[in-house]
Length: 172
Image (cartoon, rainbow, N blue to C red; front, side, top):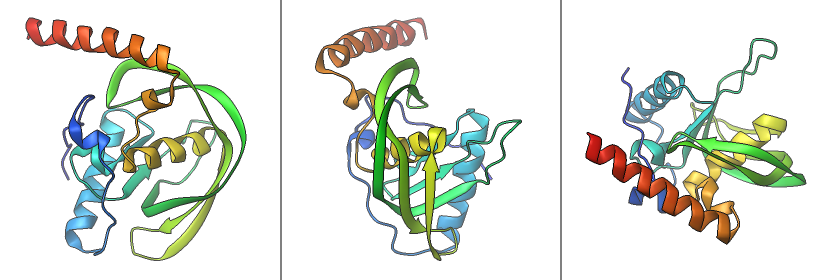
C-alpha cells in the first residue's frame, strides 16, 4: 500500500465530474487500499478518488470515534437517493487544508452504490456520516464545499486562500 498525494484546490481535477467505475479489478482494489491508507494518514474521515488524481466514482469514509464505531465504508458509483432534514454545520476538506466554513447539508441521506466487491448495497447516514457521504459524493461531481458557500464568503475565501498559498509557495 502507498500514501497518495492529495490534490489541493485549485487543482483542475477537483472541478471535473468523475467517470463511473466499470471494472472492479486488482487495480481498483489497490486504489481502494491506497485511498484508505491515505485517508488515515492525512488524517481525514473521507476521501474521493479525484482527490488523489483519479477520475473514478469511488469514495472511502470512516467516521469512527473512540465512543462510536462505524465500519470503513467503500462506495463505488455512489448515488444519493434520499435526503432530508437540512442543517448547518462546520465543514473542512483535505483538498482545502486549513480552512473550514459552515455548510448546509441534509441531516439524513440514503445512498446506494456498490461495495468493494461489486455487490449492490444501500446505506443510511445521519449526522457526521450523512455529511461525509454528501461531501465525498460532491467531489465526484466536481463540487468542493467552498462551492456551497454564499458568493460573498466564496470570494473572500478565494482571495484569502490563494494569497496564503502564494505566500507558502514563495517560502518554499
